[in-house]
Image (cartoon, rainbow, N blue to C red):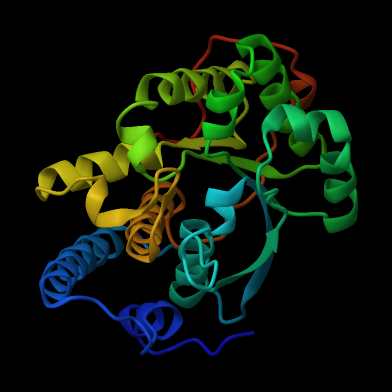
Length: 286
């Protein structure tokens, strides 16, 4: 368990800004300005969020991460992905400690995971309270995965997690060259199917956070493009993971406040929902 620093900003710096980071003079100026802007944004989010009943004892929750190489943290020198960063910041800013259970599959896809049966095994073995589903979707674009097969695989991932009494959080991936340019339309189509499936269950334990949209809006507002965050065409660099992690942290605070992410009783029969579309997405969209 890592020591909890006295301030959130110290926590972020201690966790993610190592002395080995080397940037050009121009990028230092841009990066410093962006981090300062992000910090103000995050501080405002925290200030506007009711703290609720903070406990004198820490709560521990296990979060299982499902996704591919982007969720794993590729192109960050330490594989510190946007997801790992966001949950580490939550652990250092709230009275809940999140045990990070990385079940990402580099080069994987929802359909492949659905076929091999490992997902059900992981749920039974790991017993997470939270399942985060964050596929980069570019493997599906490249493989031209049929929408029907993709939709069924996403449906199965949700259904199995709910059956294990785990809260399901969809997080779309950070912006990359491919998602912002030549594969943008295809990625948006797959995201729409994910959101439709999340809505179809009409269950209060399913949340959808469109981080890709959130990051796109942030970059446009600050005169930036994917180029500042380029690791390769499919992956953000370290700065991209850091930006996405801070934005996702803000989304988590706005969605869940400073308390734990808790299972809500959905009522009899909801976890066995067999719908495939319609309804409102539970939770929030960034």
